[in-house]
Structures are given as structure tokens and as C-alpha cells.
Length: 219
Image (cartoon, rainbow, N blue to C red; front, side):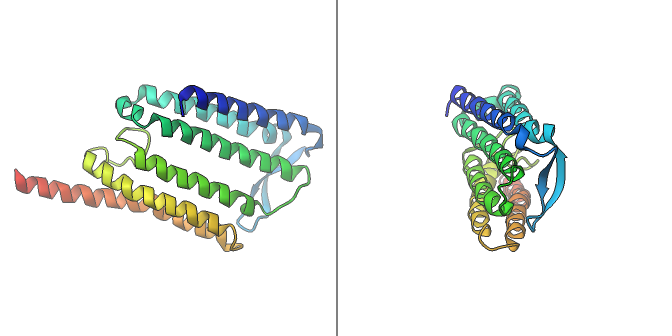
């Protein structure tokens, strides 16, 4: 996806999300439900103003940040090599955030549902695409599994990201499944996400040490 197309889609999504909040303004309570626990019980509230405008504003700020990153990274040439999938990721992430916004609006106008059942499949799709982004990412300072060891060696970067891609895609699939197993689903999602995040970090260190020893023997 081109940067121009991604930006157009994001602006359209943010505009629709903001307009939806304004249209529903009179039907929304002054104190809106804004957070749900693992048992799908509301445990956090916010004012109507922030309930309507916070997520669109955050989405706008994140979009600006993501557009700046490829311009300031010292390895921007590497980002250019996977810029298309990165742009698509930005759109998917913003769409996910605004999906949460729409769910919040719907809940607060009286359409009640199990939030986790609605959230987890979308989160699973997001994690799966993160796995694809990781698979295609080239070494850079902002995007991907950035440890001292991946940033120091292209071999470590490549192998760590191949493993990370598989783990995030697997986490995405299991997160979708977790939506259908009741209260334990949220804990399953958190567990597989922790594995997907931390295993590649340890793996990158072990790989770096292995290559360091191999390189010292060939000198």
C-alpha cells in the first residue's frame, strides 16, 4: 500500500469515527464505560468528551508518528524496502483502535455484549499481521524486534525475525480461538503474547553469542 493511499484511508476512518461520536452525543451518558476486565465487567469510566474524542486523537497522533519514523531512521533505506507492508500495518492498527472506539460507543448507547468476544478476534488479526510485518522487516532502529544483538548483526536480525514472525502469527491464531473459550480466553491471549514478545529477545542473544564464538574461531 502506498503512503498516500494509507493516509487517505486513515483520515477517512478517523473522520467517520469522530462523526459517529458526534451523531451519538446526545445518546451517550455523561460518564461513559471505557474499560472492561477479563470477566467482561466494566471497571473504568471516562467523561463523554474523552469517550468521543480520545481514540480519534490518539489515532491521529500515532499516524503522525508512524509517518515521521521512516524519515528520521538512520537506516531509512532499509525501511523503504518494506514500506508497503509497513503502511498497511499502520492502516490495520488504526482500524483496530477505531474498532475499539466503535465498540465503546455501541456499548454506551445500550448495545451490551461480551467485550472480549468482540475484541479478541480483531486482536488476533492484528497480531497475525504484525507477524507478517516482522517477517518482511529489514534492520532498522524503530520497527521490528530491536535488541542490541539484532541491531548488531544482520544474521541475528534475520533469524530472530523469522522466529518472531512464526510466534506472532501463532499468537494471532490462538487469540482468535481464545474468543470462544470463555473467561480463560483473555489469559490465553496474554500468555501467548508474552511468549511471542520475550522468546525472540532471548533467542537473539543466544544467536549473537553463537555467531560471535564462530567468528572468533575463523579469525
